[in-house]
Image (cartoon, each protein chain N blue to C red):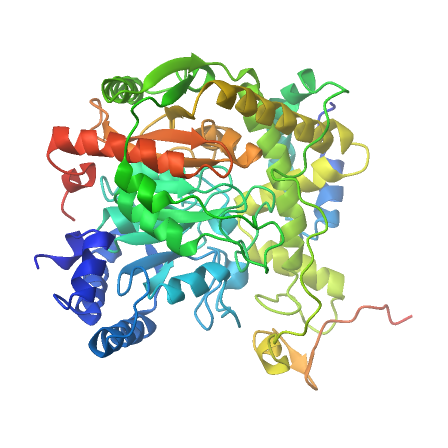
Length: 98
Length: 497
């Protein structure tokens, strides 16, 4: 397991949609490295024949009956919107102008 | 009745039902107590005084009319701010949700209402439940009522401190790696993390979905059981909710008997790294359990030493995915929307402005562990360790009925002491994390004060999945013996505020 570099941290921040300040990039590069080194020991024990566990209680295909139940109304859903227009969420531009 | 804030939930429920006191009197007494002491403790982020008094009036009307009452009618409660409550601020301790009022109730809140429990307000917590000290709350830390310069534990420090400060006899917590049990341990209160799927997560703002579990907090084992019974049980709105009968935890708390019970002492969860006074009180509690008729045996769980590492890969991975929903588009904070920035830039500026340092740290860690090229080495390996830890528990529970350990390696530390050292902070959860990885239930209850600092010490009891009643059988017996010895519950020794 290799150590984590500053460009990698900048890439992660982009993936995670975090507009980190330059000093934060330095800080997290250092801290993530320390944390990753401390957890690296788990590779010592987890052999190939051990099945991974994603969930404590195994359950598959949990469905409810297909009946209509009341949900929240449009106005309730929009009540907390940072911006709205014509009964819809207003969002910043998604496509470039060109 | 003497000071209503010093009573147990069980006593208050009886007194209200038998018209000895009114629910409004009980609620007002607790609101007055909050007004008097919460300036020092800061257990509450938001007090819902109007709705609490309205709820109390409705209970009194039911009592007067002879209408059947809920299980804990009129008893006040503090609700961790991670659970949605319709129309009331719900922030999860984060600036990104400042001012948000959910349009719906979480299932836990719906069940509290059905039990006629009066919700006093929302309690403080580490931001998105990430932390062990409540210092990561964006709204300032909670102070431990035993010593205001010390941490009340975390992430549910507000709920535990509200109990210890006699601001509420009941509280709700959520436990992802110890966030109910470690605060209980350092505040001299009781807390239970139920079996995963035992209490619905619907309406709980998710941290790590395969680990999160809401649960009851109180000052005694019986009160904790009464609250557990009120909130537990299958919920079709949570697909991971267990569709089976909930064990009778109230009967177990009343029976409180360890005669013939086989209790396993986990070798790996004691000794080096545990404060001397913690180890001393723990050894004494084991002697008491032996005198009460339990058989104490040593049990080894060799993979527990890898639990912390696995947890700090699985939790950030799930958290980074869950917290992707906070993008400033449909609710919560939006920053940088100047008409020029793209949606992607607005999301990044919003998240940078709205999340605190610990949340950003864990999002980055999780993004890394899940990223292409590292997934197998980190997240994949951690999931295998999870299997090994569960196998350790299964092997142990073939030999014993319950397992025990200290809940936390130390008593409450000073505010600020570990804030800039994430690894030192993470070590607080070393004894509580294996339980979440395996999805079993566990309790923390007070077993005395550490001689060197006079602060509460907690013991953890762990039981197999869906055998949460065993926690109350053993915890109830130990609490009764300790109460006999001291003449009162440990919490009665907390200093006046």
